[in-house]
Amino acid sequence: MASKLLICAPLRVEASALRGALRRPAVHHTGLGPRRSERAAAQLAEQPFDAMVVAGLAGGVGTAVRSGDVVVADEVRGPGGTLPCPAGPGVADALRRLGFPVHCGPIVTADHVVRGAQRAEFASTGALAVDMESAVLGAAAGDRPLVVVRVVLDTAWQPLLRPGTPRRTVNALARLHGLAREIVRATEAHVESCSLEEEVS
Figure 1 (spheres, helix red, strand yellow):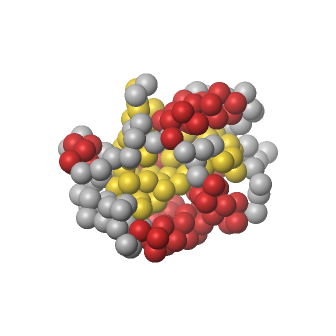
Figure 2 (cartoon, rainbow, N blue to C red):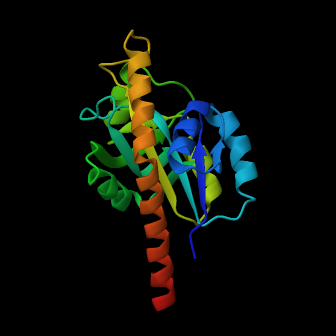
């Protein structure tokens, strides 16, 4: 039986990129920022699903992370604590096999756009990327698997308020579109593996 995934994208353009690749309307546009994410999470928690996927763009904070790179969370850190993402390494390996530049590590959810020195502060904790939604949305997953994949848009060397941002945005959304199917396939494989382990035990 196929796993039921709850796929979330905070921005409308992110949701469109995913829907275009997946050919399925069930990608939830949840809204920008923590407040909209909190409202969306309350509604999503009532739905039946086996795993949650949060996908979109993010700011890079790790020194090795560049615009266009893919960051898969092994944990998501937010105001309410840290959410583990044990499927992260497996999903990251699957995306690497497609030839994408992929990093696996912590993603931080902030309540504002991170700029300047704060990027370095987050990087010093081992974080690779920062967004404003994943930890808030991820709380709705409860005990179910949470997969968070973000394509890096801006970095300390390529901040948002620069002329190249529109081009980088188009490229990042194209990358998100290109990896959407493999994110779903790898997440479903993780869910099936967990189900088999539970049956054996």
